[in-house]
Length: 282
Image (cartoon, rainbow, N blue to C red):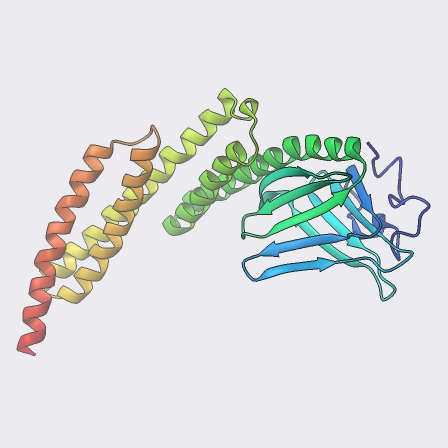
């Protein structure tokens, strides 16, 4: 497979694009696989329909798979049409075989499907092999970046920022182990990292829930039923998320969380009655 060092032009000697594809990549990006076609270009399908970008005559299309993203470049007389999709946005990778061609089919997290059709079967196999390794690798790297952000939020005392970063961490770990069908991805080390992140996320949601509950209790005692109800509802949301995680994954005592949540729901009902009475008296 070509690399940016061995094939700086990437598009080769054919007039596939207006500029060498290398110009659209970062200086430190390494090309791991390339695909080309001369007529079909690239196709994008989503809920709004199908959009095909076709090359003009004497041009063509190139799909460049680097160490971090896919770049689709379609040559036209008015200039190259360039689309870049980072691997962390990929949701699934597949191929489709027809009589004379094969198609790379990539689904993204936002629900779009990108298709690039080729005749070179071996080149497509190389591309898929690369993607099946690179996508989980990028997602695991992103998970660890989010984990670092969560740890920094703890030092800053920002509970919500910690929760947001841990949610992103858990989601990236989940996607890394599900985006491609490869049991080797879920190594013991990765599972340990994911389990630790989930445990921290459960703890963070419970901490937030209990803080909101405490403020709600204070407001209720002060006679401000509306403010108490707002905080209790926020606490319920956090308890529900912690319970969802505890029921789905190993960390967390689901029964204990459910009991706390149920007790808070009873408080909410009581405060709602108080708020209604106060409103009626007003």
